[in-house]
Structures are given as structure tokens and as C-alpha cells.
Amino acid sequence: MKSNDSEIKRPKNFIYEIIEEDLKTNKWGGRVHTRFPPEPNGYLHIGHAKSICLNYGIAKDFNGKFNLRFDDTNPEKEETEYVESIIEDVKWLGADFGEKVLYASDYFEQMYLWAVELIKKGKAYVCDLSAEEIRETRGTLTVPGKESPYRNRSIEENLDLFERMRKGEFPNGAKTLRAKIDMSSPNLNLRDPVMYRIIHQEHHRQGNKWCIYPTYDWAHGLEDSIEGITHSICTLEFENHRPLYDWFLNELGIYHPQQIEFARLNLSYTVMSKRRLLQLVQEKYVDGWDDPRMPTISGLRRRGYTPQAIRNFTEIIGVAKRDALTDYALLEYAIRDELNKHAQRVMAVLRPLKVKLINYPDDKIEYVDAINNPEDPSAGTRKLPFCKEIFIEQTDFMENPPKGYYRLTQGAEVRLRYAYIIKCEKVIKNNNGEIVELHCTYDPATKSGSGTSNKKVKGVIHWVSAHHSLKAEVRLYDRLFTIENPGEKENWKDYINPNSLEIITDALVEPSLSNAKPGDKFQFERLGYFCVDTKYSTKEKLVFNRTVSIKDSWTKKS
Image 1: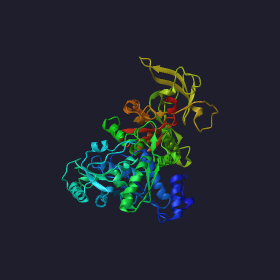
Image 2: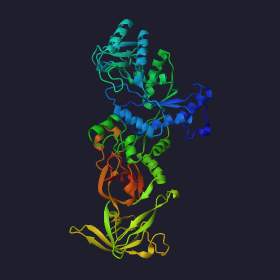
Image 3: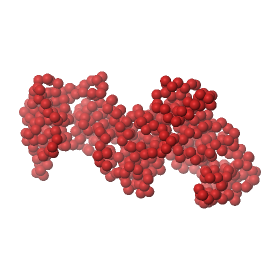
Image 4: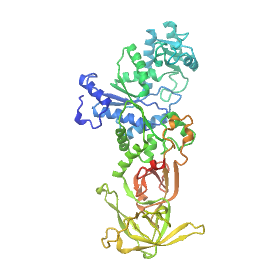
């Protein structure tokens, strides 16, 4: 396999430079083999999307291989539901992992044999200290750790105890297998780390075959070695673990991948910890893992994000060596830019105000031509019904407008999008003084595209026909937290945005949307980009989620 600079479309970064140098020196025999190794203990989020796009993008750009491998080493937190959701998300993002999904649990026997090998070399021992006692004797950055009183057991005793651990003779937490490295190492990860712990719990794939499970630190490098990974790309929190992975691989004398660390994605106005995301789900702050306010891939998909928009976003933010907080507005820019090119324009009124055109014929219905997407001439046009009674947005009328207000007001004129110029003649109010209806006149010589009138007005507003529009529920989503970096706060849930969801039940949309399917995406003219909700929308009830506003308005609010 050879690198071809003309084929590499992604911006260069330091990882690409490392790989290109490896290819020049034939370090891996011309191979590039990456992987995405999620633990199935939750749904994937946008940070995982960055890792998927990076690892798969590298494999694709260098004509290499890409594995999807589950690090399913902890049966207490892992579920089949999470496995299935992760596979769906990876496929949806367009990452091709071939026909086979890989699992760390398929390597348990080999990992066990390698652990036995370390015991025989005097490099691992069975320890009876509890998890709390291990923490207490580990030491600190300035104080060395204390050796376990069980550290110098004989090889024969360790082999016997480890085999009995596997057979299930001991209860949870009674014993662990630890590597024998250096309790005074300045790197705390090398202070006799735990390799195996006893967990009597059924595994989602292995059933009750095992009651001892490898820790992530023990399994991580071995999995990469077994699969022949060339470049093991991890986030920065694993940098201090690399010497431990190296120690395991070197002591075993097995194939040794190259680990490269990069900065993880931290996104403003949300949390990225799976533990905290699980709390939001379990404590009902959100409507499941796929709630459109969540940073999960399934939540973004339900909100109307596209795979291409997410891939574009990961390219915009790039790959760095230092952690930083990425502005959520960049993610919104990516989907706004994508939908602007491809989403069909339609008209919808979220908060309807009735308008009666008093000089329009009572029984007349005509159809006006509307452009489907001005960015894409091939999208063509559609017909919109127009009649005596229409609905406009409540905010498109003001009795006492401020200076520079170019929408409808009494005695003033405004153009209806694709239709006529109208003038407000009378305002109808209810007993509470609320405006319930406007009586207007229309100028028949001002029909859009007719060329029969030179009259011009500054304001253009959208509308729907009162007798042809469809009722819809519209969900307006905002950011889930009110502060930029809630993850820094111990009381992070105190900053959940109470206005992150507004549900409008009496919105009206144009009749062309009667054929809209779950997941379909549209621009509601002047209002934003919306998609048909995949969870609650039915043939009898249209439900739309706001994906993103037409323009970034958050900076004005904060």
C-alpha cells in the first residue's frame, strides 16, 4: 500500500504526518490499519464521531483497513442495546468496517493465557487486597506506593490461585491479578496495576463462561496486537497509560502497535461524559439517549443532522495535541451549511394569526409557484394554494412597531411570499384585547412573477392557506445547559436550561408536507431548519424538530 498525496482530501495533521513518514520508511510493511474501540456502556456522542471520522478517514485515505471492535470487558455496565446502537451509528456515519464486528470478549482465552505467561515469568501475582486497600497503598504523585503483602507469592501459588479465580471459587472483590512492575514509579499507572478482577455476572455475549474479567489497561494493547493494528489512535487521557501498554507488550514479546494521542472533543453548552449522559437519561432530564438535545449521535440524527454535516464538522475543528473547548456554534454552522444546500424550502406558521382578504373572491382558489431551493435550481418548484383566508405569524404584525419594522402593521403594506402585496385595514380583538384576526386588502396587480406591477415594499412575510394547511406539532430545541462549560461544575445539573424545549401544538404547515416521512428535512422559510421526528411523528400526527435556526442567534442571548 502506498500513500498518494493526490488522493488524500482531508487537511494534513500531525497524525497524517506520522503515517506518511511510516510509509516512507516501510515501518509496517506499507500497511495502515486503524480501529474504533468503544465500550458498550452507553450511546455514542459527537466526541466518538470525531474519533470514528478520524480513524476511518485515515484508513480510507491511505487505502488501509478499519476495524469496529467492542471493548466489552465489563459486564456490569454493558448491554446489547448499546452494542446495537453503536453499530447503527458507525454505519450511519459512513464508516465501513467490513462484514465483521469484532469483540474483545472473543480474545478472553488468549488474554488469560498471556496472563498465565506473565505469572510464570514472575511479572504478575494474585493479590488479596480490596479495591479500597489497593487505592490506599498506591501512593501519590509525590509519595511512592506500598508493596502488597501478597506481592512475593510463589509462581506456583499464583498460578493455582489464578486458576481457582477463573473457576469461580472466590467471591467478587476477594482477589485480583496485578502486574508486578514498580510501586515507586513516578507514573502511577505502573504501580502494580490490576489486570483481572472477579465479577460474577453474566456477560452479554459470553454468558456465564467467565467470572474474571480483564481491566481496560490489560486488554487495550492486547486487542490492538491481536488485530494487527498499526496506528492505535487514542485521546490524550491515555497518554500516561502508554508506558503500561508498552510494558505489557514488551514483556510478552508480541506484536507492538504504535499508540498516538490526540485531543478529545469538548463541546460547549453540553456534557460529554457517558456517566453524566446516563444520569440525564435515568433521571428523566431528557427523553432518552436519542433526545435531540443530547450530544449523542442518535440524538443529533433525530434532530435532523446529517452524516456529511458531522463529517464536515470534524474537519472544521481538525486534530490537535491540546484539549480545548469547541464552540457549539461550529456544529450548528456545519449542519446549517449542509441543509442550506439540500433542504427543500416550505412554508409553516408556528403561532398562527388569521388574515382575511376582504376584497378577495370568496370561492376563489389559485395556485402560486414556489421555489423549492434557490441554492439548487434542479430542485424545481411546487404549487401552493392561495385563498381568501390565510394565516401569518403573530410576530409578523405589530400595532405600534418600532423604527425599522418592515412587516405588517395597520395601514401599511407587505408582500406575501410568492403571492400578493397586502395592506392591513382593520384589527380584530377579543374581549381580552388580544389580536385574533386581521382584515386586509390585496392588490391583484402585484402577484409575484406576473410583471404587471412595479410596486415594491420592503417587507416579505410567509403564510399558509387557512383551508389547505396541515396541523403540526413543532418542537423547538435549544441548548441543554445555560453555561459554556457545565462539565467543570460539581453541581452541573443546576445549570440545565429550563427552556431547552418548547412544544408548539397548533402550528400549521403547507399541504405539500402531507407526504413527509420521518427523517425528512426542510427549511421552514424565515424560521429555521426542521425535520420530521422519527420517534413521535405518525401518519395522523406530524411532529417536527427544529434542527437549527436560520442564523446563529445564541450569541445575542448569552
